[in-house]
Image 1 (cartoon, rainbow, N blue to C red):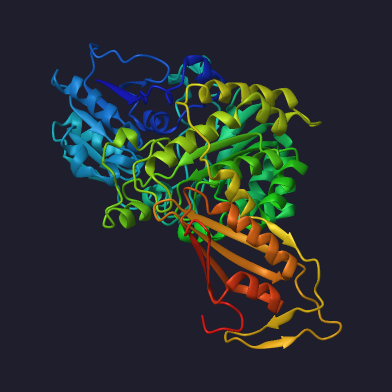
Image 2: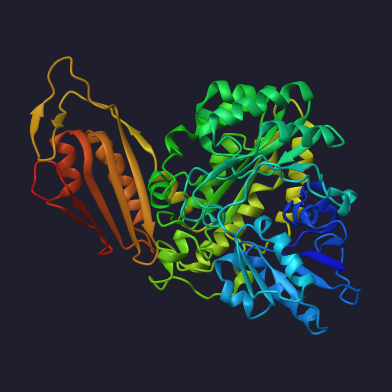
Length: 562
């Protein structure tokens, strides 16, 4: 009996990777190699990763298994059709099939729902006996104990950056709305016995490996034991972790000492409002720069995941995000367009809102707009994303992010060159015309004179002169979001404002009331100290109209009922 397990390639004009790029940045997946290890020894099992070798549709095989994420589904269905035309049954599993099993069943003979390890041996036995079921649903979650070592020998090792891949945990303790991990693995965080992990690591050839965990530091006690046990092995490793690791100096130091040289960190957004919207409040935007510094202080290369298109993203998000990456020397920025994957909380929220543009799963790839953004058009989001991808891997940006004294300098440069080859295939984009203006409206204006400031206190308006010795906030902070659909700029003021600050703000406001911006909403809610001259200058009874007939409206004005 012969079984062929297939990992479908993703065919896309500019997202698909050449063989050269795969050898520079790609590491092997463990799903199929683990199933191969669970297959009875009397069965001949082979693996085809279509990303590195073509599929032989004419081979002599008895059963075919395919897997894949959402964007792989159309190709997986094509592969299934080719084999089924020859009368060969096809089994499909993975996140997409688990999210939409009825859809998948229309294209294959058998659908595995959930983690396949718990059902694979039974499925194979049923096939031997000629009684395959249409669906196999995992009963609970796979135990992480006594998992067989993956059959890495079935892969073309020379075609990847590395096949030295090990899994220590499954799941994530967090539940971000856009993430498939919790949906597929459940709201659990399971740890593999450290002894078994260490034994597997010792069996690997070479001195570099990748831990393919979704969050290797999700359990502090477990991570501490793992890192401690790794130290004597003198291996270098990369993995993925949440931002919480950077707030644990002891654990971060131990990770570096155990051989950590690179981490994928899901930064996602520089906006606290965005992070709150997607249930990722454990990411603290005000601590991001400190977090990046902590990683660099331990000589850990940062691969940062950043998402465009969240509900508080306006046209300024692309340049603002790129400058953050350059300022903090993030070695490998990885930009994504927000993608509502089936089964996630984000998908369940957007679908009834009518915000999904279509369900062409091949386009749900993190690089194509498949939904209606809140504050900009679909075209602006797509073009801005394209611009950010190309600009991030321009020589100018690479120089700003990478060219500084550090260890493993050449590794960082070579990684950027590999990513640059991908970015160059991205379609042309553009920086939205309002981007520079929006940067000036997300800024800090220093105070010139605090002598005549009045302090605002409590939920209701209460005014009193600042007493001698009292301190006012010595800056006015501007937080602005532009709604392209409404042609309206929302500006929230925070801190203190004096006459000179009001004049500077007035100057900037006149500058933004250009051809595109029709209205500005100026919110004083978080202004804690002010001068009466400043308020008079900005509010004019709540409304200021320009010569062109455009206007700004002031709300929550101190000393008024607005």
